[in-house]
Length: 614
Image 1 (cartoon, rainbow, N blue to C red):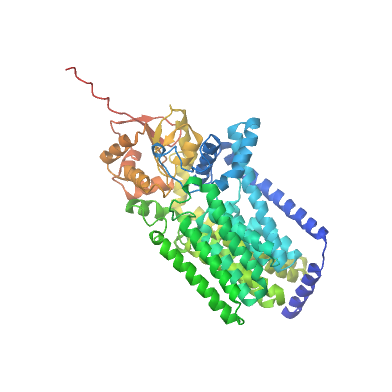
Image 2 (cartoon, rainbow, N blue to C red):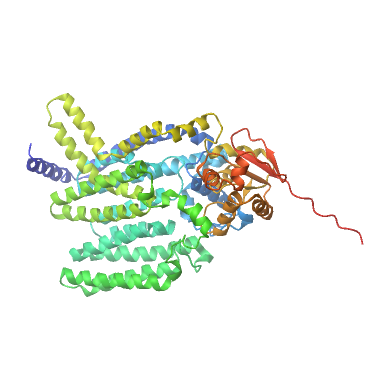
């Protein structure tokens, strides 16, 4: 079979698939998606069952999110997202209550039936898995829109093969990153839909929700608006969609800002929506409206009008946000920037990641870019247009991924429609092979070709088995000489309530699962606290004593072998933590038995001086 005949066959099949109108095909497709989701969900729950029962969090942010929800349900104001269990109650946060809503609702309903801890487990299972289902549904729709129903069904199968995507929507992963993926994909789905006022409204609302949850979504929000604007420049009939999108984004962001920030709506911020950002969105809406009102007759004229709108938008932001040009991390104290921020690899560029991990993140987007370009070149008419829009979003998402690793999950999601279309073409070709053995090999190769992340994962697993350093650490964990995970430190929850000075990454897990309070954790709105904790563990014993006494801490604790404490031990061999881990003792600290490799001490405070009688 020649390439041209294969393309002709695909075109005839897709035309027939699109001609299949009526609700029945959509119902069958939804049932198929739910069936795949159910089996994937069961497998994910089984794989995470030990973590679920022990309430082990995938990341410190998930523990902090549970803290936020519990404090809200316990009476903390909807508008107050500060974490008052740290730093004597003064620990501001920039997170949004929108993410707390479904978690809080499920916990509130289930807590009277199964208790607080099990209610939290139910919420931490259901919410991410429902996000997974939503992603599957949206990607199935996008794939059906740009390709056909057969490719749409394959797109659902590819979701669990996208490891970075799956990692953000698995049980116990309740941070906001899963919501970022869902809302970006939702905006993309409405972008490639039939351009109407209501689809523009839905896309704009998804973007407003995205930006309210996390300002990290701004590059992809700009990409969606930019692609929609370019689509209007090419096809002026898309004017209603573009205006609906931009004005809904602006008005929706204003409304959500007021609803979620309340009395704090006028507070300046570089890491969340603020008045400066709202003004920027408003100027963008006005500029795009002006461009569409002018209605230049030529494509070049429309591009010039959009360029003027973009320039006005950029000028507005620069004029109102000069303090934010360095980014939300630009004002961190040097010690916090060097030791904490630069070691948060998920926020670092892709080229700073371990090679195997970078390949795992970027593999599917690379395949998706190739496949999407292929489909765009082979498509005609409206299908070529929607493939071009999807390609624009995928290029933008892949670009963001290069500079921020965790953005790779969104790039993986947007790569799936193209990868599904390529997989369908490869499977179609494999079916023509007469010999069963060769046909089976070709089919397996087709799936591997569009899901190379598992090849990278297998390569990393093999490499770790022959890496002496990795094997040594594994042996130390098995012999319980170093901590296996953060969970090991929770045993100090049996001690009387007090303030605990712990490493930054340990604190959220400990405070979320015990009655203790903490000194600080790794959240950039408290940069001085971050620096103080680092200085306590890396500085001299005398400096550590000053910090501990000033913090009011009753206990000091840490876990040998975890990434943060390894940095303290390795990079500061004369520092306080390195000396503690080596066994050195100090007269102001009393060792506490933990029953695990975790190390803990009770702080011995000097007795207050006795007042002399006159």
